[in-house]
Amino acid sequence: MQKLKRKLNKLLFGSYKHSLSNSKSTSVRSLDRLNLSLGDVRDVFEPYLAIFLAADRHWNPAQVGIALSTTSIAGILAQTPTGALVDASRHKRLMIATATLAVAISYMVIVNFSALPAVVAAQAVIGISAVIVGPTVSAISLGVVGKDRLNKRVGRNEVFNHTGNVCAAIVAGLLGQFAGRIWIFYFLVVLCVATIFSVFQIRNQDIDNTKARGDEQENDTKERATVKDLLGNRTLIVFALSVVLFYLANGALLPLVSQELTAGQQNTPSLYISAAIVVTQLTMIPVAGWAGTAANRWGRKPLLLIAFAAVLVRTGLYTISHNPWFLVSVQVLDGIASGIFTVLVVIIVADLTQGTGRFNLAQGAINTMIGIGAAISNLASGFLVKAAGYKVGFITLGVIAAIGLLWLWLKMPETKESQR
Image (cartoon, rainbow, N blue to C red; front, side, top):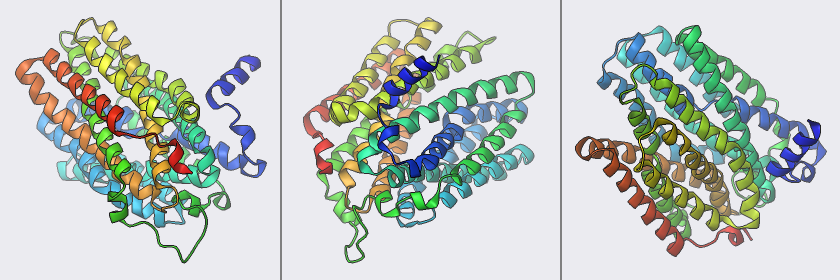
């Protein structure tokens, strides 16, 4: 068993552990625990919130839609300013702890107050808090391990994060089935407490705030890059458009598949939906670890092309069969595409902003593009499927994926060398 564990660690992380100083080992292990307890509110808990509001509170679909869309809108509006705040802050651990506490309090408000304004306000706080945590974890990772080791660190973050998501989804499902849906949100509060504990186990002296914002070294006389400078970075703009195209194609696929899976399966729809989520997350665990290492060996662009190709193949497969377990199995391609993309977004932004002091601002802007692409994808595909059916919807998303693949191939340069 120990031999198998060593081989798995070597496959996922290579010589990562040995490349770090022993003095930072405590902070590195705490980063692992932090990512493990960071349950994904959007992917893991929000679906249960929709069921809770509809089934337990008897809200109509319009009310549920307002509550859920508030999180996305608040997140989109807060992404870029949050990035600038993370760049400027020297209290990153406190930012994560405060945002996590806000999520816990907001869910308790939702559980205990049924009025629409109270739930909408809580959802807005959750949306803002969620976009604070992700960039700040990336910034702490960069500040602890440095640019040279960021690739493997980001891959490692994603491995632990998706492992935590799988465990959280399983526990939440069991609690909802046997104890009641309200206990799912009490479980989320427990995860929030564990997250706050883990983040303060990261030693503040191990976080280099200069490196964490993308600066090479402390230099009081050097001005940071301005927003105008970032907008003048052609490669960053090309990448931002690639991100929009990726999430335009990929954002609506799982919701559409979930709707197709539930059609005619009124007795056991949750079985298929849960299986689809777990298959995706389980696939992302090894893929994310591999992508962090492969980004150095292969470069960034080939991995991005693989991600777009996986989305393109996935849309095609969805059109050839309606068998529930076939549709669930195709989710492996979602795990491959999303596992690569979530890792490469952080790495490429770090490549393109090295020395500018604007790593987190640029990351916030890219995350805004992600939110916009996913929101438009869900909104437009919903109307399209209603008018023309699922097959036309999947084909349309496939065409967008093909355009994104072609755009990336022709316009996006390799960014691995740009960090020099």
